Length: 119
Image 1 (cartoon, rainbow, N blue to C red):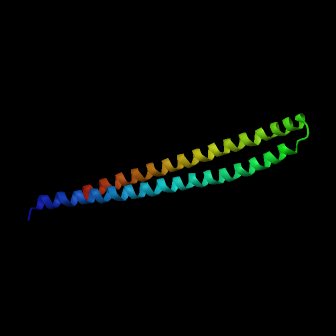
Image 2 (cartoon, one colour):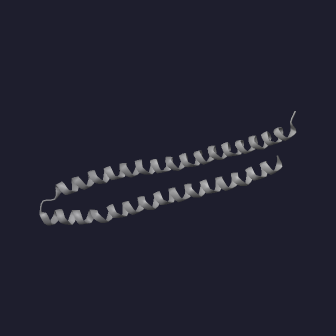
Image 3 (spheres, rainbow, N blue to C red):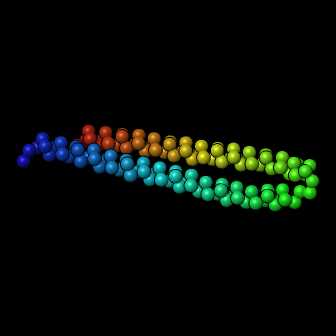
């Protein structure tokens, strides 16, 4: 009936579909990143619990204050290493997820521009 309105409607529909597809893919990427972070947190919590139990058992076996201090000082380095490892791993997860989201967004913007120009 009105060719101009049909043309505008087609362009708007193409734009909406492109935005919806982009949001779905970005959301999936974000959820995948959260899943990796949650898995890291769970494995870190389990390892921390095991280390804490082991540390407590060692500390209770000390018979002198000097032995207790030696045991305690020996436990500091692994704790620091574990915290650094966690931080690096979490930073990797965050930066990879950010890069994936940026890539998805850039691809969808380019795709949407092509679809809108074609319509």
